[in-house]
Amino acid sequence: MTYAPPRSLSPSTTRRASTEASTEKGEKGDGYQYDRAGWTGPSNMAGSQRVFRYVLLAVVALVVIFFVSASSGVGPGSGYTQKASELLKGQGSIYEGSGSNSVPAAGQDSKAGSGSNANPIDVVKSVVAPLQTAASSNTHDTTSPNPLSSTSSNPPLGQTAPGPRMNATFVTLARNSDVWEISRSIRQVEDRFNHAYNYDWVFLNDADFDDTFVKVTSALTSGRTRYGKIDSEHWGFPSFIDQEKARKVREDMHERKIIYGDSVSYRHMCRYESGFFFRHKLMQEYEWYWRVEPSIELFCDIKYDPFKFMADNKKKYSFVLSLYEYVETIPTLWDSVKGFMKAHPEHIVADNSLAFLSDDGGESYNHCHFWSNFEVGNLDWLRSPAYVDYFNHLDRDGGFFYERWGDAPVHSIAAGLMLKKEEIHFFNDIAYYHVPFTHCPTGEQLRLDNKCHCNPRDNFDWNGYSCTSPRLKTDL
Image (cartoon, rainbow, N blue to C red; front, side):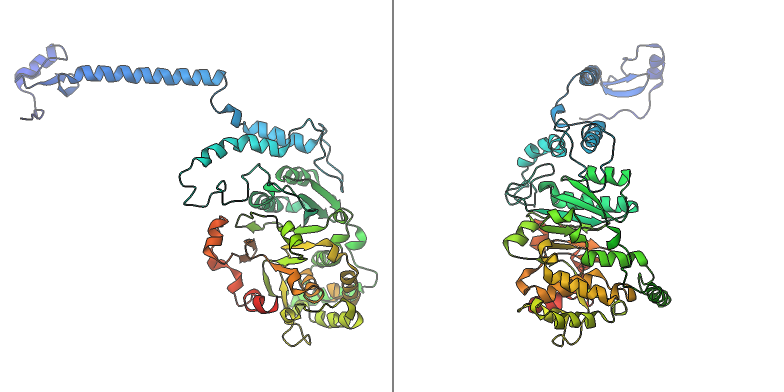
């Protein structure tokens, strides 16, 4: 029979409880024990409670001893971790080179430090090393995408991919005020790709880069960072432009609310990206470029080297998004292009992509272009006589200032006319965002394999304003 504690004490029990020891039993001898705190259960529970208290005190004592010893010595795993302050000091020494606090001058490398300073790759390796061991024993490796699984070719952060590197660089045109927006872009590129390849990064500006820009950007990259100032002759009004006429055009576009229609600096940027960035003395050292702009996002891992892919497959220009240009910004661009084709028929190649640009055999322009804020391309092609002749012809016609020609249609038309179809590549697997458009790869398995976090419903390719889906298979 099972007993339950009485609901109340009898008078005799109450009297004894007030005068006797706390372990005195109730008057019925029912096996329950009463103390000043009330009913506590069977009498043998008193011994159990004492044992429990002793064990608890022993555990607390052991924990205290452990923390005291850990604070005064080297604890488990200390070889794989570093304090945040130490990592920051490491980054500072990397930037400062041989200990100097001076900022590299424009056109100089920011990471030409002495061999005694910590290498950023070595610093990261010491942090991620234990993760490799832990992940290798993960029982879920075979059922979900994992950066350390045998199916992945991209090593974890801090480790470099094997194999040769191309003569290539990232290139960014930025102002000092863009530092935090471009920092976001650098982290995207580094985390998704460049941590494994360590390619250089060239930053170009029409003014001198300040200390903050250089320190922040050089700390974020795994390769060399280089800073160049744009020649004034490449960033300004050429002598043949009627500036009064150009001013009236800007006023008119402002009244018509055409995007960037009244901006002088935007026109300088479009002209520079169209015809001069590849001529900068820093860019002269490279064969391949990848253009990166502030505040972009990469949604997927890139598990191979796009530069090497382009070289191995004889590609010269690539894109991820295409769309229609604003008609009001380029009313006479195609007229200028037709003038170039007539003057230089030797530069127009057979089996080109004219059908991507025109729906009537070249009589008119359908306004399709590759969105040039993402480009991976060949610099030797841009420096070729064909492209330079093309740019010079357009430049003399004045449309960068008398209208508002953008570098995107200028690059796209050049690629469409002067490159063979097979020399232009669509990077479907590079998931990309630049406000306000997204490219999210088609194919669920591709997105899973590359650890993508984009929503496929946001893919601009299926938007009616995109030129990719209706033209890609037939015209490129």
